Amino acid sequence: MQDVANLANVSLATVSFTINNSKPVSPKTRAKVEAAMKDLGYRRNAVGSALARGRTNVVALLYPALQHRFSVTSMQFFTSAADQARLRGYTLVLWPMSNEAEAVSELTSSGLVDGAVLMEVQLDDPRVPELTGSNVPFALIGRTRDTSGIPFVDVDFEHTVENAIDRLTELGHTNFMLIDGGTGNQLLGGYGPIARTRTTFGEVTAQRGLTGVMVSGAASSEGGRALAREFIESYPQTTAVLLLNEDAGPGFVAGLQRGGLRLPQDVSVISIASSLDTASMAEPELTTLASPADELGRLGVDALIERIEQQDAPLPQRLVKCSFHPGSTLGPARSLGD
Image 1 (cartoon, rainbow, N blue to C red):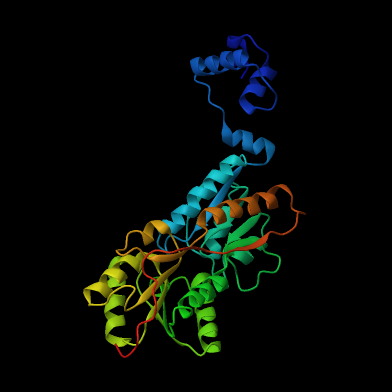
Image 2: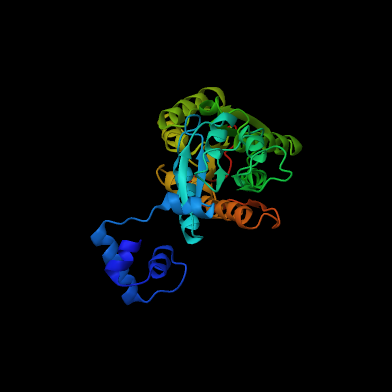
């Protein structure tokens, strides 16, 4: 830094102000300092600076890539979270790791990050007690079974399921199926979105005297086609489907039509907590209760940064509803005698 100051003919303090943006520096002076840095090959040591102030301004987004595949919706979470972190003066890194306490402890003990946002949360997530016992602030995009003292933002799955059933019953549907991606999540036991959706679906259909069955399938186009074959062969009385498996959606719609069913004349399908991009890949386009992924990514980062900067601030706990987009797969129930 002294060499830079000498070459730019400024004080050492001015070089520090320029590098750290700690005090205003005129554009002319900044240009001189940056030109001297370039000529001397000087690079700011971000690690050293972080050690000096005890903060890295880096936050990690923990995603269990070994146990849960990426989707279009998860990418929306990533990008919105990264943008919000940047606006708040932080760098967000995607940390693909398993949902195991040991993996989290390796991260928290490294000193590389100021905090962590957890995605793909289980009802009894082993990462949460590990982080609770550390000094690393954290927030969840998702919910554990017991949310006491835990900052989180999440999709309101309970409202989403009831909303979908309301729309279908208004059209005369009484025979329902819930299709989820549970087959692809054996390693992620008690996965919050699936567990909450199944519970709510079972409760609502029972309370209203509706027929409801639950089926799981692989999160892929082939998985969707396999689900369509199972639907046609085993559930001829079902006229309404709630689909919590966006990657299977286009294959499921194609498989139904290949099997001779018309959408929505013979069967109505609502894709829930998924992306509009994936819904548009189906023909006809899926009716969707779209995930608020962009909003939740921003809120999750804000919840974490509030814990980092103001640990005594009110604990953020927020549910966000899915938004309805009509599509072309929602229609009146056919007569079961047809």
